[in-house]
Length: 133
Image 1 (spheres, rainbow, N blue to C red):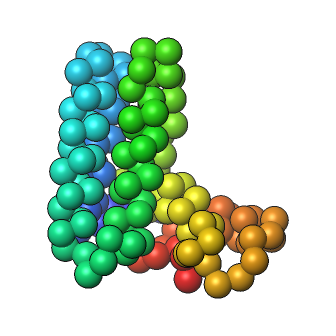
Image 2 (image 1 turned 135 degrees about the vertical axis):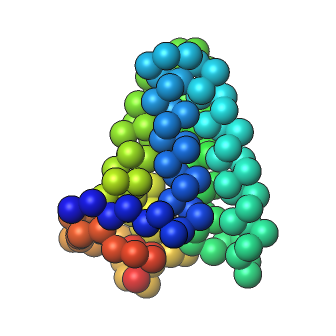
């Protein structure tokens, strides 16, 4: 089911980022650099809006930016396919793999890390808000 959250500014950041990654991979690599630049702006904007830098949306954007930076060297460009596909999933159906990964970090969970917890986080239906709870 589509989950187009057009009233949410964050959704628009992700939409434009997905489009830039698609352009960067399929048409012109400049799109990859623009996606990284937009993600820096996205991170800065959400950091300024958050009451603390450890806020979950800030963490998701931080680790997303790290993934994009890891993919920048020519030999690693194939990695951009992962955030491109994942970002389109976030934009279209609200499934954010990065948020699910970040929710498993020790400071974001209240229970021990088990295979059952990992399974629950990754197969649960998309939700509005945080998957951490």
